[in-house]
Length: 151
Image (cartoon, rainbow, N blue to C red; front, side, top):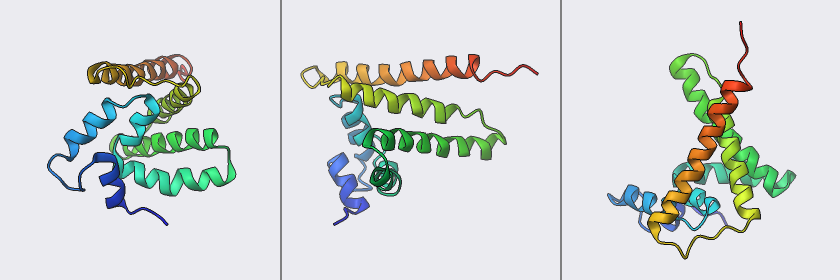
């Protein structure tokens, strides 16, 4: 039996969809997650619901879970890159690469069995934001050095 979007959001945010406290709960739960993998369980539950249902679950029927996870992150990046194409008329594949790095960070976090649940919320939030930032810096470096093609 599939869970509905409303049920999924209530599960992730602890409150019903459309609640005025939804954003606050989303930020509190995602930033304060015990590890980077759990961060993504809480972050943007609407997008997460559709990515899980229509991308991750079908992929994992064919591919190993870890590859399905990476492909789901890259797909999410491609969606973000599509927005840059619409707005700017071109893309640098920046988001696809950033999300690839974040997907790899999730796998690394799982492999290392990270669990920061004993730390206070602010420390967990700092760790999760630091991981996002490290992936961002890697993306900036990668796109500037590896994708630069002089004309």
